Image 1 (tube, rainbow, N blue to C red):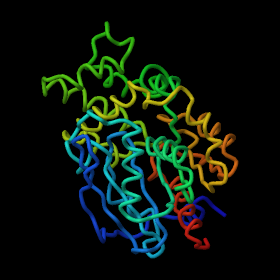
Image 2 (image 1 turned 30 degrees about the vertical axis):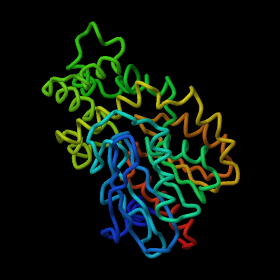
Image 3 (image 1 turned 90 degrees about the vertical axis):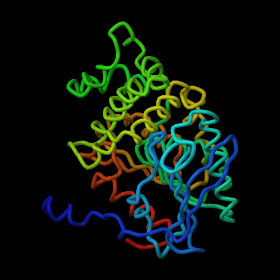
Image 4 (image 1 turned 120 degrees about the vertical axis):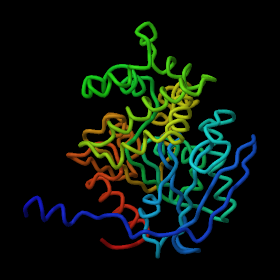
Length: 325
């Protein structure tokens, strides 16, 4: 079998689909989150957790599930996408989001649901599943990120900088040399500045650093969206806010508490050359959670859109809906 025939057999997204229901849910603390529901009402319940933090979900994410077999909730987490107030950092922590997920589950009347999350969404999925394991029927996680000090330093201080020196220079540009010893803190000062020009310059540099390093090969369709003004400000402010606070997690908490996932069927998907999220932590999760199948995708970076990663994700959602490949 040649490479072209192997590629042609890879699974892709389901056809475009519109939500059958949507709305705004008040979750307290002045926040209202946008949600929508796609697929078939009354079919297998699932929730999709987007990345970032602060990234919002896209219409493509609706297409990760067979619409005839799933009843899927997608929502924009606090402060991003269509949720309000935009770019707000107040009452915006991992544990507020875990509580929001529970509010959505109860709103829909689901007893349990499949939880799907990639990148930061994998962090949030693990935090939710370890807090409410009795509410998770299955867990599908991609691009594992556990917010340890080492992971944050790898991406925002030294590590990925060695792989992308050209892009790293652009990331450093808004920060004076005297402040580069702690780049997350330096960016926080600018992202929370009252000067919109300063805030926007920092937001675009922060967001584009991620947008241009998440795929194995350049993918302008993916990276260009990170430079859009409103998206960049919400994305950068919220992501930096979470990362400066290490997600309000204890060091190593998500792997340490993976024993709480015992009995939950799962799938872990990770690209060999994932720059933002080093493979080591997906490997550690794999060892700590033997109920999950582990798929290491060669020749892939971080983004869910990369063919080998997308193939494994679609196969996972199909399998958990009882659909044979």
